[in-house]
Image (cartoon, rainbow, N blue to C red; front, side):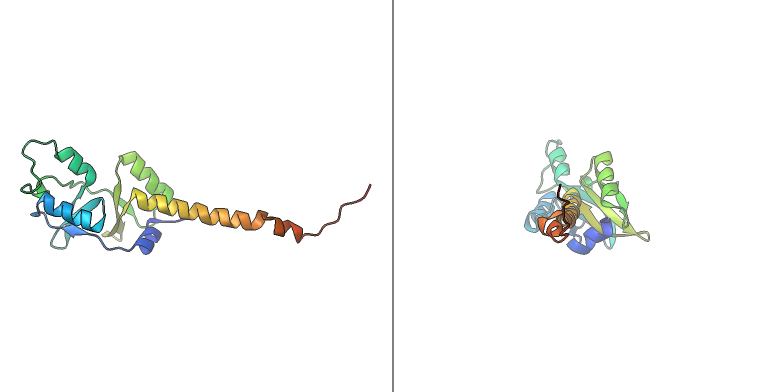
Length: 155
């Protein structure tokens, strides 16, 4: 079964980030350019938060929020949600559903090694089911049965 590490191996471990002093507009521009739904906030080499499309929806109605002047540090989520690199896709799915989130940081040996989204897990589930289907199809296809060449008894 696919694991978080398998997903990162396929998609890569590059994490798109900005710094806490960035404006929300700057962060949004990066997200739009990279076609991503979340951006990691790093202070030097340390991950200090994440800001997502959902955060934008919540923030846009906040009094005093102006994307061109508001700093990302004032609106980012700092409670980072983690999963282990060897968590299976079913465990990851449970974490996404249970925590009602769309992004998980992946941790290995106490270090964050990447970020995955619900879409990454759905893609992995589809890939796994496709492989299962292909294996089953190879077993039940008609040519397989024709090769048996068993004879029926006549009555």
